[in-house]
Length: 315
Image 1 (tube, rainbow, N blue to C red):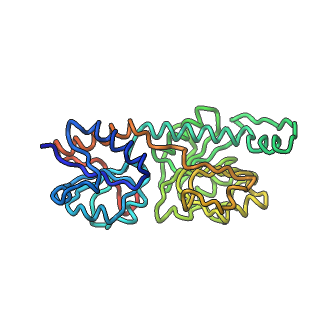
Image 2 (image 1 turned 120 degrees about the vertical axis):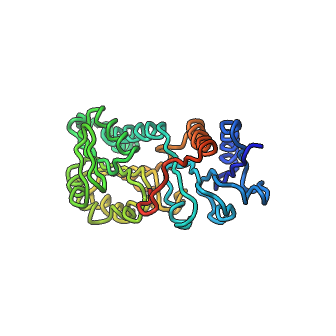
């Protein structure tokens, strides 16, 4: 009899059904994927690996013998915050397609700012026919905060399209064609030079509130901010203040402290903010399911657990 792998998501019924079908198909030769609520008592007791997507911690706790959980998302800050330190190991989704998708989004929205699209949208609204001065990518410096897989892929794609690219990481790193900085001094060095700042660091205790009033005031005057990481990394009140007084020119926000963004949020109507519904790098069901199936198959056959999250670092 094939082992049962619990599926523990917090998602809409449509998303659950979509994932259940794809995961069930890709894992069918090795295991049976079963929704948490349909597990028998014996299946809950014997499960040693589960597939999760922002699960209710109580559901995970109801699987007492879990060795590890496979997340369907690259971001695992909720898991690291809510699961006990001595709980199951956490494996984040490492999908190469996600890096390609994110780098595409970073390039697209960098070009949106670079080619003055927000200003032209305002001109259309006001029925103004006016050409703006066009800069070349070589005249524009883009700073990428975070040089993990997503940040590195994005920085390289920007560089390949002619931009001068700076990169920042907590510890010292090197990337071909990228001018790299690290630490607090390096962060302010990057911010002071960048025309566009792209946020791609993971959310941890150290990056929460990482860009506040001091950091935003340290940005180059007229710079734009693109946040494709997590909402709490950026102090939105400080951002709005910097936009209102003209120190920053625009912000493209795809992530927020609370999602969906509430209808009452002033960000919807702010003329220097572009609001996106967390679409910069959605998980692709097909490619992600194949990676999950490969990881779980290897575990079932050999006991090998994929590289897992360092709970001290949070990623």
